[in-house]
Length: 120
Image 1 (cartoon, rainbow, N blue to C red):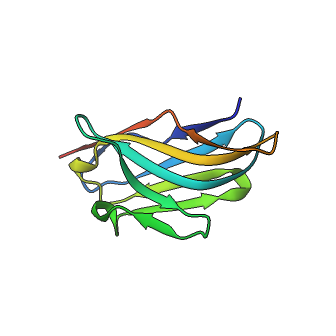
Image 2: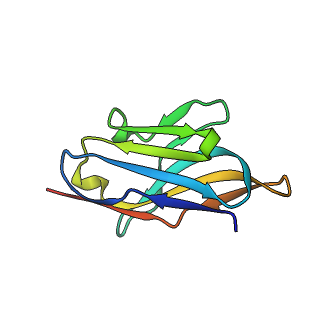
């Protein structure tokens, strides 16, 4: 079964760091259009960071200078390094990507979500 599996969430104090991972599993030939979203309680889901097909990166203004998205295409895995965390970063974080499956078809997938809680 092709899927995206997230890991790395947890509870940290303000100013701390976490690194989220998103790994494609199953028979996957390639990965593209990688991104991280988050959803806080009572809030709409928002795009946090993404990597375009041209390998450029984008960030929501609230995380610029603190978060970094990166990838390892050979492992079909990408990451979100989160530094200087703030309580307002508390949310469930979801990864998404387009995966090339064994039928040579690109399809979009989402991870299961991982909780990030930042205490003050």
